[in-house]
Image: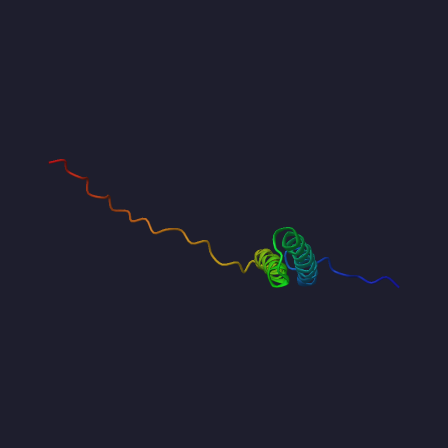
Length: 95
């Protein structure tokens, strides 16, 4: 028996997006934790600061994965642009 599955466009396939985000989050968490641990071994003597560098690296990895996943789900925060008024600025007078 052959199943007749309708092809779901990649844009709407939530299972694939969740799988990609989980994979991305896990990889970035592990890689950045190892990087933070290695940097802690090279730069710091105290065990507390070494663990702090591991935690900092893990936080960077989770944060970057979160922003990437938000972009994949099209829920990223809007890019804020500075307000530019349309009225011209008065020219400075030389006196």
